[in-house]
Image 1 (tube, helix red, strand yellow):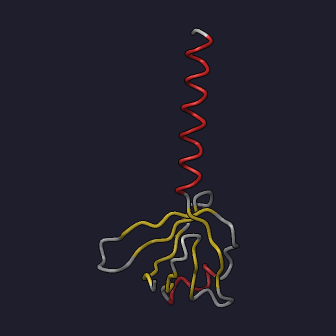
Image 2: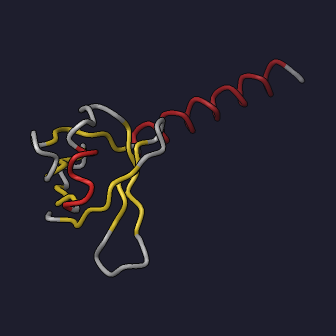
Length: 92
């Protein structure tokens, strides 16, 4: 690989990494009882009552992703590193 090709590849990887980081969501805050989660995009989520105990143990700044479920209006908020999730409905 030529030096120019190596530099180009490094630049592309850095651009991809920055884009991936910018698109990532993380937890801004969680109420003490785990019923509301606010994410970095300022979206607020009403956590299912059966998952509130689990969500109350989550920490701010943990990276998450949001995935739609087959149930209308219900999503899963999934912690990226841990892989666990809670069911929630979007409030805003």
